[in-house]
Image (cartoon, rainbow, N blue to C red):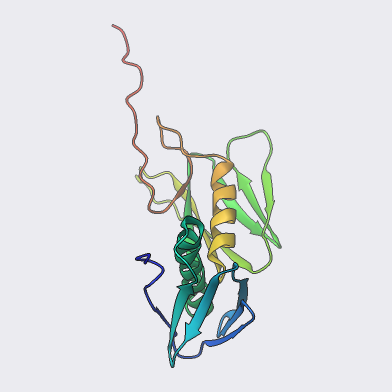
Length: 190
């Protein structure tokens, strides 16, 4: 059995699950999500626990077993607690701004970049106040929130791809927990 696939999924209070004919619908305080199971994968529900089962031990069924369990767990967590990705915009003159359904990024190009926020995702942009003598170039914090983990990850990756952090000064858009190793520049000759 798959270590991930055989782990039970705890259902928190306030989350309702409806499973019929391979379609699982998960409703919670933050919204609702649904997922169509692949053939050969089923779910068994007890009082407050879901077990994902597979019909045989073929390579494909084993892979789908763990995948399905992870996706259902992400749905349950998403509708009960939600997900959030935090991005930092770092660099002199770099900033982000929320304008209606758009995120406007000024990242050192000759033009600003406008990205439309997908449905079901909330974006909050915080401007970081600059204090005198501060060496940090952190200009904006972009918080991406929602219930669908996949959609949040895709949009966060799209924002980061506009200007990934570079290795010499660290300027660009990076995840809050991302570590960028700064290289030494050219040594000046005397």
